Image (cartoon, rainbow, N blue to C red; front, top):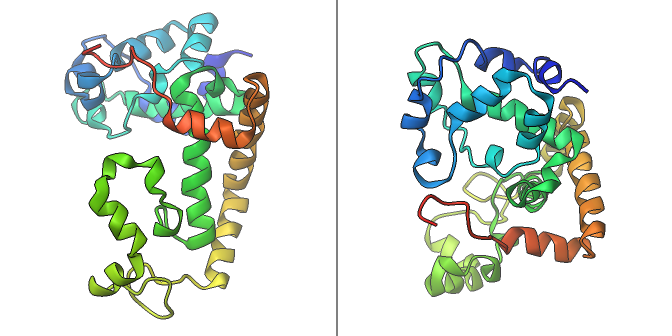
Length: 231
């Protein structure tokens, strides 16, 4: 497969990849580059070479998963490039080819995809108290742990309509609306993407000798050193 040509089929790549002059403005303005060992200028430069081996290394690396997709780069580039858009195209191709499972940050796509999309399809919200487990987020502190244990009382005092009928924050979304959301996923390719992430992640879990539950827990919580500039 010619990776450059495959990327060039993605409208985001066509929008974001023009003539890079390697000025480094994107890196200077990039919030992720301040913390991570991440340089959007180098990514665009690598793609610009059209070198299949180098692009494949990118697709299998942690590097393409550091971007926050804030698009600060788009606002500053003198040639109107969009490294953030190029990153989106690289991520999409990495997932389609299953290369995302070759990097630590790429493997985190599985728990994020499972939880966030599960919340959307089952509850109608990206984040929902019913699936927020304190053990997975000890950094939220003991006060939040207490709030989760008493969420019905807490949300009532805050004026929310937690799991109730009618209007209000955190209201129960009618099943017919959830069915519409599922139909949107089916038509736009979202369901196919979820199945693809599941398929490749399941193969990686088997390779690592883990059950899917173990794999989800490991990829969600494990973070090695070497990702940040201060390490």
